[in-house]
Length: 445
Image 1 (tube, rainbow, N blue to C red):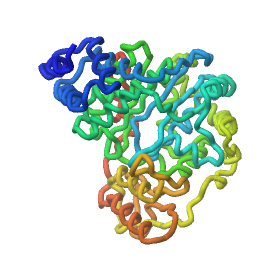
Image 2: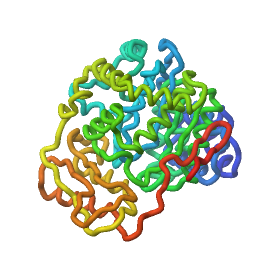
Image 3: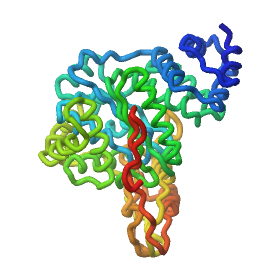
Image 4: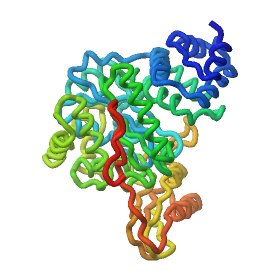
């Protein structure tokens, strides 16, 4: 088998076999296939696409390139949740305890943030003492004991994907839906879950800028899950403005705690309930989504979800008293008010720009090795559609110091709020649901 023949086959629109895809993935992982040939193959995929079967076979080949976690020692149906990333997305901090409080085991491996999107592991590490590294035995024992554990991804999960992604990043082939889908799903499959719920973001603060592209990506990922025998569903959600109000690690933990108390922002609560309901149904604890949501609302109202968060934090060495006293979380040295330049309605919020503002304050990483400050970030005071008067606050910056850098970030933050005379048409948060049966567009979307 020759790599050049496989490049030519894909260039001409042919379908590669399982054996041919394994040859490419294994050869590239070992270093037998050079970057220039794998780049040519990736560009051929970019233009020709891949069938559902091909994409699933590529996904499995990448999952097999490194460690695969066997979750069978954990009792019950293990359901994982994955978000394609966004600004202010702290859903795992809420969904994990909420779903686990209904007896569904949540054994989750999460990543760190890079660029304008935050990472779940960074947020958890803002809780004093919280450990995100557990041995496999500790991981299994904790999930069997309290129903929930979240740890950092193993360094040897899908090494082929890491290598291929780095190549795609410098060869203009990142935006290939089959390659994105196989990248995401290879990690989920290697992590061992029985069922997978996906939150695919669309809009200005998301990787997929249009709902049509987000649906195409969601369908590709659901098709992969179905092909490899994992129950998979996806929700397309809007990321044209930040989710909730808080952007930044400790600030997002604080907002997650408020949501577990039943006091969180309406958009964040709505999305967490929707994603959790899908997890509960796939986990076999409810016959349908309506019943699942009713059960979840009861767990929020009764305090059971917050109790599970407390137990989870304590089990991983963290200060569980933050659940009752969030002021024990890291706090910034300076708070700077950002005010509106004019009166009117907030017509648009540039979510990506606010994510970058938080990163510049120190809440995120410009490079993989950058050190983050858990205390800094920003909280927005207005959402799209709300009325604001000139001089009213639109955001608060939580900064290391009230210095020149923070003031420059304040101006960028102010510019992210587009204010006009007319109230904008409102976009629903939940746009569609994608399952093996097809795409269901939700009312109002």
